[in-house]
Image (cartoon, rainbow, N blue to C red):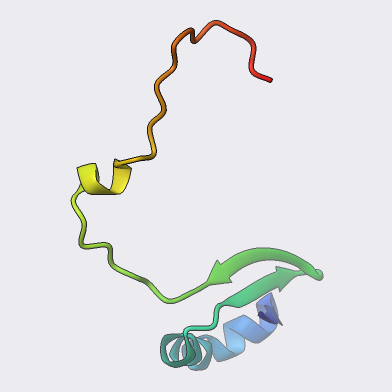
Length: 68
C-alpha cells in the first residue's frame, strides 16, 4: 500500500484521488509516520439492508453467560 504524509497529500490530493480511482489501490495518509487515514475507491453495495445482514446475526441462547 502506498503511503504519503499529510503535507504531500495536501499538495497532491487531486492527483492521488485519480490514481486511487484508476488503480483501485488505496493510499494511506500518515501524520509523523503514523497512519491516520485510508483513501480508497468507493464501492456501492446494491443489496438490500436485509441481504447485507443475512448470515451475520448469531442467536444467543443465554446472553448472560460469560464469553470464552
